[in-house]
Length: 200
Length: 200
Image: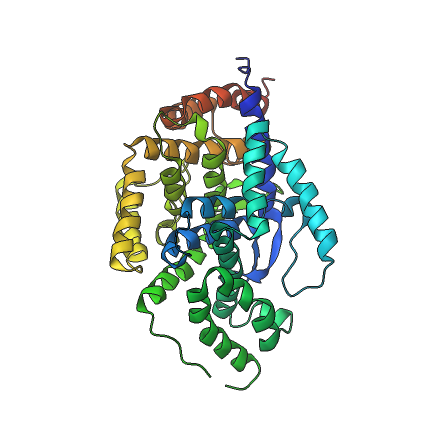
């Protein structure tokens, strides 16, 4: 049998990619076509495709390449920290600490230079200040309502969400980085909420 | 209730993104952590992450951004045409025709300019001629063996694949666009095949 070439750098990259596979086992509150719950890996693909498709709705001067990189990496911390549904109750400070520890461990599997650069991409996403981060965060908040509309309720029904809660907690996160997408979503989402409440 | 703004362009983009959700229901021959079968959406995320992580192993002058775009789009045609496992038997010409028809339908949901640009990305991937397409194709062929190794056999066991078949059918597709990755994979995959054959 051949002996393996001495490749510590590639070994480290492959350890990271192997561990990343576990994101496919992190289950979200949203439902996909067929009504099963979505996992965070397929969600990450879908929002990256949103970024590619909806790039023209990004803020002026936004670098779509960076947005897609953010969205490919944004949920990896859930491998250790789990997914926290936006309508669930959770301790924000504890969640932030768990996610930072997860980022240390997961990006720390990579060669040092790459660990630093991937961590910087994730930190930028979390800080939600650059146009890229704001657009990426907005897409991440825009995709689940679109799935809920397709499911005729989805996590809105599961969590008994009211329109006012949705408009208070979700709308600003979408409108902040992608006002045109919120404008598109609002009347369509409202119609589903009205139907769920028996008002239409 | 508000009326929806008149947004035919965004409506078309959202129709495409909604239809793309069905890629999460296309089941592949490979198995993920936990031993369930992988779907093509989460696979697409994983290989895009491979491209981001392994960019330095790409051919000289390869544009990683384009590679990632290809990998986000490469399997969408499976929504209509299904997945064809590399070790399965299928009619190559019929498959190619089915995938071309799927590309017509799916990319055709988009506004015309975007339909043309996404189709060009997919056509370039399929033609496997540019450095970007060759690297993307190689990653697409490299990821499943990595999952099979982690599963201690996976689709190699399910399809009773022999080492010679693997080396003849898969190796050239990896080595073509990413020779360094094939060099890393070869002894590691060989060790798993030897174990499966009771030779080690």
